Length: 353
Image (tube, rainbow, N blue to C red; front, top):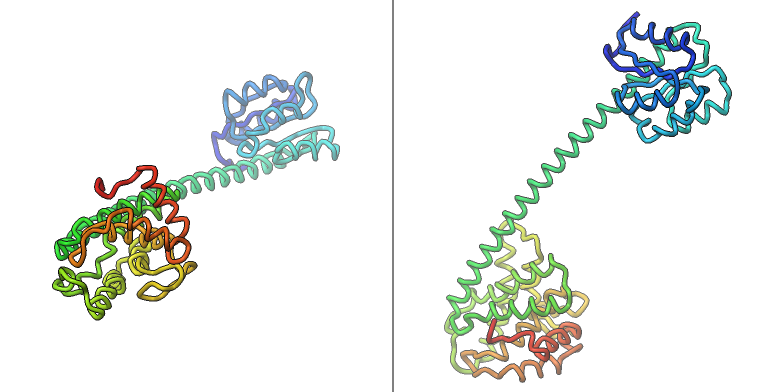
């Protein structure tokens, strides 16, 4: 006889002492550690205390029956193999025990103990495979969890690096165009305040903040004498300044690094208008990101309310009148409503931004 899984602990629950002891003697003789219980109550107590690797169970016993014992430990049966050994052999008993989670069903008397050995060997082998699979699954889940955490950490590091780059670029743009120093900072503050008013989700909110910080990046491609010209711009000069949205997009499109937000698209679209009258592509409402529509309003309000080399500040009232006039026509209606509410309720001030 071959020994399978020596020292595995088996629990025999059987009220007939001769049947119980004969099975126990045989199983101990081939290398198993065997516990014995003469009724269901005793079997349940040993099951809870000793946590056996397998249980061999009679059905008809005084007090707690085998069916009742199976029902009491049903939640543990998927991982604890249970073999029912019963003298009834009825179809109903077989179905009832299998429904409760029993793994196998043998009929008494067992004339050839090799049948019992085979059933025990098969059940323990299957249980071992289940355990190993669970262990592998747990190991795999831990690996996935570790890998996910590492990727999240790297993504966060990348975001922080990109944010630092954006800050440096924004500083460079403002250094080159001193007359609009603070413009991008104030536009960013207003755009984010509008976004909060509209309850924009956090990912979009974060991307909008970064795009707003460098939305005039393309001005580095425009001669500084035009940016700082104290008088009225000529038609050609104005057309040249209008190229900054496309220039900013082109700069951000260079290289292989990708932002985890649509920053270059927001920068590209911040002078577009919902009726298609904007530039550089003449896009209309459905084609514009909500971030771009927010930035467009914030940019107009700040630009009109603040000083420019070619004109004095027009003031916040004029700026708000402009977006009110264009509400639903050239500016997104919801964005304008949110912006007006911020100033009407004194929740925002350009001077304190």
